[in-house]
Image (cartoon, rainbow, N blue to C red; front, side, top):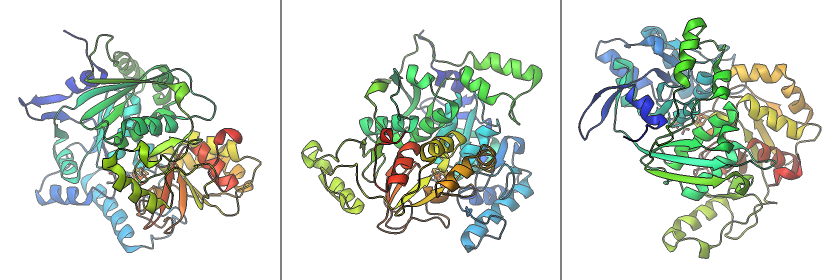
Length: 466
Ligand SMILES: CC(C)[C@H](C(=O)O)[C@@H](O)C(=O)O
Ligand code: SF4
């Protein structure tokens, strides 16, 4: 019998019941909850007169609807205020731990879980949020679920899931100067398209992946969902173990030793078989940026936007529509395009390492006068650390505003909206029409590329400023 994949090992350890040709009932170790997808789920549990089955394995934090300025004041916008209050009330009623607005652990759910050690290797993790794939960076099976499934997990701590197919994506070699894991993600999605991973769970492997920090691995797994995949994962190694060690919710003492011994067994066996496998060379990856309205419409920053003759005829209409929306023309050079907004943050690139990267690149320089920049930490802990490390000071001296944590301009569910027609270089993960505000135009890139745009006011190769 062929060896097992990392995915299979974790999956098999969590299947409670399998139905032939049907979904399996899978036990869930950690359930993260935010204000957008939980109200109806809690209402459903309440209506059935039952309890949250395992409140100690459920953790909540408001993130989407919170403002990133003056968080000590009541939320001005009514719907957002209501969402955030409802989450707090539900968590209190059902005995779920909530890191509410103002709590030292508040922040974006996918930043908070890992930094508190709630996310651990070998676990099954769900949240009513597509970017739950982020947690796969720890060698966990983590995926997003819908509101009715949130209710299912709240009430049973299990979920029904068909087993996905298995894909491995290897990136071998050494990344070039100015190339980050965000660029790996945008490169892979540009190669395989936003549908390339549909039906699969992806394991990222290879020497370039193993050399990444935990933050960088989270960025990559975060974006696996933009490939259409159910989720992404990376086997735990010493980097992972070192990161989890000592965190608030991490196992301690003898439990820690036991956990680590188990985690070390969680990797794909040498003879494991994948349904699909791709291998890329790290050397081929340039700093990337998107020019269109889905994350697969990206290119190396020195490239030009493709011309119609390089695009399949069937896609011409959507391609042209996307060019119109962005205000670009096929064949345009990317470098030199004017930038109005820069957003650094989100569950993709709002961690301490991202802020460090941005701050180092802008240190001693000045923000371009034509750019409005929002630098938003992913959590209160990231905010605190950035202040302690002097990052806020560097940012302020360079003319940048450092805000309070939240999803912010990643999606327009709060006050931080990019105005219509404006071009934003954003470190987030989606560039759909209207994603950052009605009519807003998004170009996805790494924190380094965002820094280069912020200080020059135009799309700039980050390798020229570091
Ligand atoms: C609001 C939420 C359901 C949504 C998601 O699932 O991803 C959001 O986080 C996003 O990034 O679009
Ligand atoms: S930061 Fe963006 S992608 Fe992440 S959970 Fe919030 S809205 Fe979704």
